[in-house]
Length: 322
Image 1 (cartoon, helix red, strand yellow):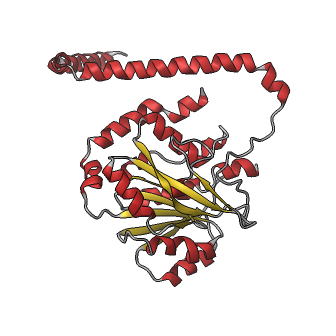
Image 2 (cartoon, rainbow, N blue to C red):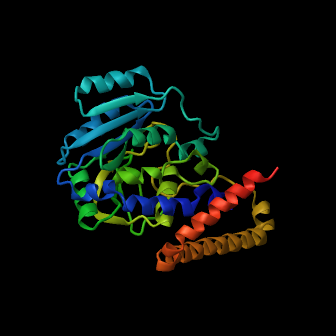
Image 3 (spheres, rainbow, N blue to C red):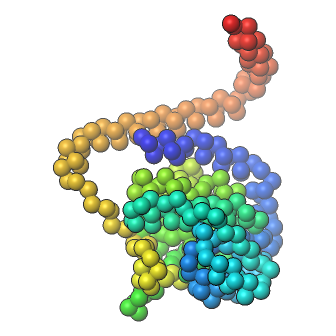
C-alpha cells in the first residue's frame, strides 16, 4: 500500500500523456541529429571516469553529445580529472552533501547515486538521455544504435545488453525482454528527455528495490513505450568485483535476512493486503478509462460552461460562510 501511494501512478500517467501532446516530444523524433545528454554520477572513481567512461562517449559514432557529470560530494581530484580531458562537451557539478543514504550497506547500494543522477537529468539539455556509470564504458555504437531503434519504432525508452567483465577474467552477458530485475541496467539504456518527470527515489530503499529497476518499473506501469536491442551496447565492470565498494552486480541481489516466523505468521494478512491493493489499482484504471471516455465526448464539451458556472457559484457560497 505504501508503494502504491509513493508511486502515485495516476499522476504519472497524466504527465506521460501531457508529454506526448507537446512539441518537445515530437522534436526528439524529427530532429535529424539530436543532442544526446549522457548523465554520469561519480563519487571516488575519478580515474575510471577520466580514462574509461567519458572517452567511451566522446569517441562514439554519434558525435552530437554532451556529458553531464555530477559528483556525489566527490573529492577535488574529480574536477581536475575532468579538466585534463579538455573537452567543452563535458560539464561538471559537485553536490555539497552526499546522499543521504541508509546506514545499511545493502540498502545504501540500492539507491546509491540517486541525488546526483536526478540533478544531472535536470541539467541535461539534450532531446535524449543516456545514463552511464563512472566505471563502465559505452560500445562505440551505443548511442547511435539505441537512438536509431527508438526513433524508428517510436519508442520512449530503449535498452540493450550489458557485457559484465568479472574480476577473475570471466565475462557474462545480461539483458532480456520484457525487462526484469537482474536482466537490465540503466547504463545500457537511452530514453526520451521528456521522461525526466520520472526520477530515482531514495524511498526505493524502503521497498528493497534497486533504484534503476524501480525507475523502469514506474515507467512500465505508467505505460511508457519500451523496447530492447538484442546486442551488447555497454561494457559493465561490477564495482564489487573490482574492489570499488558494495555492488552485487546486475544479477538479482540477495535479499537481506528476514525473520521466518514473522513472514509465516503474517502470510495470510499479506495475501489479503496484496488482493486489496490489486483491487484498488483496478479501480483507478477503471476510473481513468471512464474519465477519458467522458472527457472526449461532445456532451462533456457542450456542458463545460454550465460546470464552470456551478463552480463559481460554489466558490461564492463558500466565501460567504462564516
